[in-house]
Amino acid sequence: MQIQSKLPNVGTTIFTVMSSLASEHNAINLGQGFPDFAMDARLTALVSDAMENGFNQYVPMQGYMPLRQAIADKIHFLYATDTDPHTQITITPGGTYAIYTALTTVLEPGEEVIVFEPAYDSYIPNIEINGARPVLISLQAPDYRIDWDFVKSRVGPKTRMIMLNSPNNPTGAVLREDDIWALQEIVRGTNIFVLSDEVYEHLIFDGISHQSILRYPDLIERSFVCFSFGKVYHCTGWKLGYCVSSAALMKEFRKVHQFNCFCCNTPMQVGLASFLADRESYLSLSSKMQEKRDYFQELMKSTKFTPLRSFGSYFQLYQYDRISDESDRDFAIRVTKEYGVAAIPVSAFYKAGGDTKTVRFCFAKKKETLETAVERLIKISK
Ligand code: PMP
Ligand code: GLN
Image (tube, rainbow, N blue to C red; front, side, top):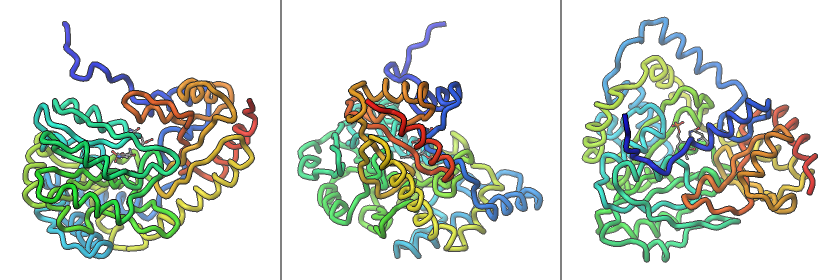
């Protein structure tokens, strides 16, 4: 049988490539973004209780209602916005799925989506599989800020959506209030949708407040805002997240969702519904992750890597131009094989593979893991 590939230019995701290489070479995996420390035991206990108490059958396709209500309460508390859990919130099997579903809900062949690079690696294939075209805007080190005048110049009659990701993977950059004002000005009076990937919502550092789209009712009307329980609660393998939108957009989103996975697993939704009622469960996350960023950054001072600033997420970018002039992919592979530490080459986040001699390290790890990794990285010299 012959098959015509729908994604002819797509290979295996870099996260799988580097994680496989790391395990093959017994390397410390600071590549793919997942914690190696235990998640909150209160949450696993709540999920066990839910299973034992018989919460093991389908929930409605929109998600377990008490969880949707807990999310609406959290949105009200954090962003002073009222959302209707009946019509505006849907639980999804992870943030990636929420993003794919939102794109599939709105995109028609030939339409354009503005994507800022470096971009999380699912965005462009998700756009292309819907027959649409990414319009790429490249952001630059060290601060990866968006030039909104330039964005305006790339908006045209085919522009259907603008995709944002703050805190950003891989850069750790965050959007500020004036970024949102500029976005509001660009989309006002247009039919442009916004997809806001906020999976690192509760992992933002240095006292900066997260500029969620959910703070801005005029933007919610045109936005799909995507979240991941896996990322924020350190259980990436659970693959559970949610999407928040206007009632009108969510109605269409659910048409796609209900015939794809129908509903997500029940006991985890039941456990999370109780867990979220305790505000500390999310308010405490940023400072704990900031400690890890600071600890890693301090250790890395003994190496020849040059840090870029990370204001959020699990990640920090490091330039290695004082060590090697290899491509970032070759460098990351060699460091995994020869020194036993895996990282992600940042070119993987650019469609055209631009190479800025930068790699991404995940610092969401135990102290001992970070220490052993850095002991190894210290040994790399020119
Ligand atoms: N967006 C970004 C930027 C991410 O880093 C991730 C992490 N995997 C996701 C979306 C998806 O999260 P999930 O694992 O819940 O699908
Ligand atoms: N978001 C994670 C990362 O950036 C990986 C998720 C995945 O493997 N798809 O490392």
